Amino acid sequence: MNEITERLKDILATEGKKNIKDADVARELGISPNAYAQMKFRNSIPYKEIMDFLSKRNISINLFFYNQENKNLEASEKRYKTLRLFNVRASLGGGGYNDDEEFDEVVIDKKILQKFEHGCGPMYDLDIISAIGDSMEPHIMEDDLCMIARGYPYKDGDVYAVNTPDGLVIKECYKQADELMLVSYNPLYTPIRFRQCECQIVGKFIGLMRDVRWI
Image (cartoon, rainbow, N blue to C red):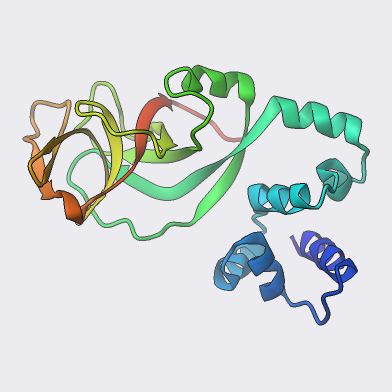
């Protein structure tokens, strides 16, 4: 991560910027300086932000990361996509506050993503949120990795990730007057209601990955 930061500083220096600090790099990437410092400490590279940074400047991503030319890069970019894996757990049951919005970035083969995008189209950004609890069983289990399509149009009866006063939840949603009713699949759980102004619909649940082993 230190080497990556220095390369980014070199690029900014060629644009005429002087006395470039890590905070300057963070702002150019659209990341808060504190979050960037934490990434450096964890040696976690913000691939998506860096790729956006390089793309705006027509700089080869492969050349930047691996000192290789464009042919292999183009093949790689066509095959893979980077998604955000949030370090929060969406409650399927009793709730719990989730105010940590840090995320890691995972690279996934686009052929796999096409299976999920079939239900929403490729125009929506996909995020991954890990599930906790049993209220959406048997369809969504604890530790499932839920694919969330941000900005997908709302429709009663669909399942969404929702920020509520009790934390982030994944539920079947219904709007009734000024309320949002959140329904569980598990019959042991009764529907819960919040005022719509208290909630934020993050995105639509479009599928999941189960028993994933990261290597």
